[in-house]
Image (cartoon, rainbow, N blue to C red; front, side, top):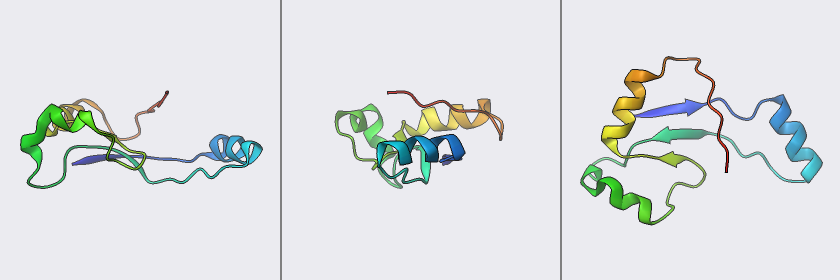
Length: 77
């Protein structure tokens, strides 16, 4: 299960251009890969996502129930 984040918007593109960097894209908030749900919170010990936000399977299910399509997501460092 995953929530796809619409990125980049025009403001993000302009900011990246000003910095001379790429915006990349295809950012998601997602659970663990198939058959690895047993890892649970252990997955937080290493950044394995290539730019996404990984949560446990239970957490993504809770987020999916609580967050309607079109919800604004702000990702900050």
